[in-house]
Structures are given as C-alpha cells and as structure tokens.
Length: 364
Image 1 (cartoon, rainbow, N blue to C red):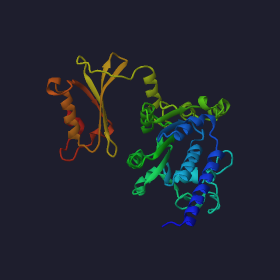
Image 2 (image 1 turned 60 degrees about the vertical axis):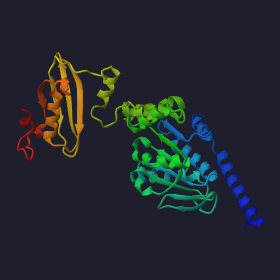
Image 3 (image 1 turned 90 degrees about the vertical axis):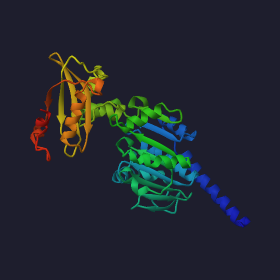
Image 4 (image 1 turned 30 degrees about the vertical axis):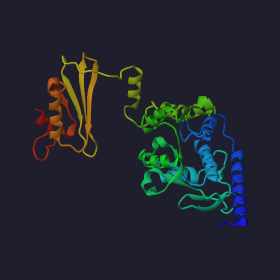
C-alpha cells in the first residue's frame, strides 16, 4: 500500500516534470509558417506530412514537438532519417545556422543528470529523459533492428529518400497504441514521397502541407539567385526551394524530356492503331530488369508509345512467348500487334543456354 509520503513525493515529481514540459513549450516559438503544423499536432492530429523547402527548419520544429510530447507522455520516440549515418551527421552532430546544436532541444544533454536529460548514450544516439521517455535517432536502412519496440511517436525526416518499408513496419504499431507520425521532407520526384503527400492531401484525418520559399520568406530571392549563379541547376532550385515533385532528378537521363512531354500534353492514353505495324525496342537486363517498349510510327516525325513491359529473371523464350501472345487477335486474348521490326542492344547476339539460339533468331 502506498504511504502518504510516497504519494506526496510522486505527486511532487509529476508537478516538477509538468513544469519542465511547460518551460520547454513556452521557450520555443514556431515561426509563423510553422504554426499550422504545430497547431494541427496540438489539436490532436496523429498523421502529418510537411513538404517544406530546404532550410525551413523541418528537423528543429519536429524535435521541439517530440520533446514536448516526450515530457508530457512517457514512451519511446524515434527520429528516423534515411540512414543511421545520416542521422548522426544531420541531427546528433548537427549545428544550425544560429550556431546551436540540434540536441539543444534537450536541455541538459551536455551534462546528463541536469535539465530534462537523465542519461545519454553517444554510441546508440539515445537520450533518456527525466519523464521516463526514451528518444533515439535511427535509420530506415536498418529498421529490422527495431523489431519488438513500441514507439509512441515517430518523425520520418527526409522521407522521400527513406526506405518506405520502414513506414510499413511502423504503421501497425502506431495504429495499435494510438501514436503519432510526422513526415518531413523535400521532394525527390514522384516517388513514395509524392504518393504519401497526395494521399494525405485528400484524407480528412491527415494534415498535409507544401511550403515553398514564396510561402515562408525564409530564403531570400537574392540567396537563390546566388545559388544559381554559383552553379545550382534550375532543376535543383525548383526541387529544393519550390518543392517541385516534377523537377527532373539531377543525374537522370530523360527527366527534363519527360517533364517537357507532360507540359506539352504528350503524355496520356495512346491506343493501338490496327492499320499500322508495331515495332519494339528491347533493353536486355542481366542484373537489372528487361524492358520492352512497343510503338508505332505516324508519318516521318511522330512516334506513339502504345505499350510497355518489364520483368526480371525470365528466359529469352519467355519474352518471345510474350510477343507472340500480343500478336494474337483480340478475339484470342491478344492485342493484334503486327510486328515489322525488333530493335535490340548489342548483347542480343548472345546465345541462350538450352536453346543455343539468340533472341534475334528466336523471333525470326
């Protein structure tokens, strides 16, 4: 049975922790453009996506929110970056433009046993708080090692570069314990980051926000122009400062061409014309997938891509059969393709083991 003295001590401890949480909360003031996200979380939203431009303070505001939650609601909290190495570089050892360490969000981290920090492990990037909560930096590259844990809150930093399987692993845990998750990132093309934002933007229980430099004013146009003059590509500027999901990825071969094609209205549903012959273009994969484009020529200058197929680990005979199936009439389950030419890479002359024939020979 709990004595009055013990009860009084526990009550005093609870008051002290609440006071620490209050000081943290009142000591941090979100920037004006960060307030909608903060207020949404404060209002009970448990799923949030913040697609903000570079240097908008994504990690800082999410750390402050996590600290507030961790002091008020004891539990396990993770701040996950794409890789554990990146987590150490960006957050654990990170320093902001104001000269402050990212870990300054945890008062007392330099001297565990003071402030709100009870204990700290540099090797595990782990902080135990006086409230009983545990906060840890982790990477999506080794989420399997987190099996068995029961986080109450998770921040996915730079989610567009993370392994999306990590979210699939964490999702049911947060659903069961009614925890929260915050995704913060800048776009990297129309990958899983785009899919998540598009979903959240149309889901009544999710908070979704996309902020460019025009929305925040955090980066001046002069600074962006200086970046451009110093060599930053227009594509990178659109991606990093204007949160464009359509900006061609730097280093991609055809990204700019695809963007232009979409802007020109040249991407859409293109039907097979039975009156015209069909050509194919192969990319034969060994370690990579084998890809086949099917197209028709309209006049001397227009090419219409009417079909595409990709697969891995299949034999040449498999693809020969695939083409033959598509050549069958529609009444027989085919597409009615009348092939006139097949274009192959230089390695199409290699013979397949078992048949002793090349793909060119097998297709006739």
